[in-house]
Length: 290
Image 1 (cartoon, rainbow, N blue to C red):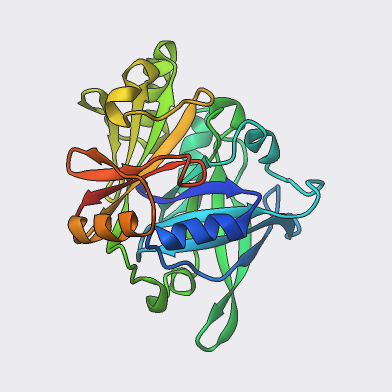
Image 2 (image 1 turned 90 degrees about the vertical axis):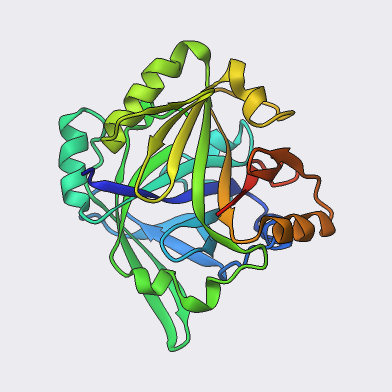
């Protein structure tokens, strides 16, 4: 059994949190209040402001993260701003684990990470007042993940994140189903091999997709020549490209009615529909039957 059990969350980066949050609320997601990040760039290092804060759509074990970048850019410990200079949108994905130390040892031995286990925290509101949510993270070496910031996270205080008051969504979303990565045809085999080693799983072929399945959620990889067959009509601003994410919903017809009623253009997919990146703030959002 792999030591990574799920896609913990996707990360969409924005320099306009108000507009991005408004879009996702109109898509039917309940979002948490803004929470600012504190973190260290090395194990045991001092936690400092990271120039970023988030609002999240939570599902109980997975979530969507809208990560706002604040300030003049001088605080950017993970070098996110060069990524969003290409385009604002999906530039991150976090996989979940129960033992960050074990994951770190495996990834280090495979020459996939040299970050060590990094501390992260952010203050959150609870019904009993403010509290500090704490995490541990292992970052993949950035030279190996040109698509964005990829890391593995352990929640030390999951009860502070997945609060019951935030888990009901007007669109009926129940969990993060998948994240889609588009790569150059010549890089497909190497990228699939890299993610298979990161996640310690055997790839499956679901033409035109290659799928890395986890207990909850899955990573999907497609060659750019086949991308049109997966998300018809979507542009590719750069390669590699985290093109979109899919959520499972309890009632597909109700979700479609809400999304269309709020002014979004929807395009059909087998088993669901999607809203394109241009309307969803830089990353397509698919809605699939749970």
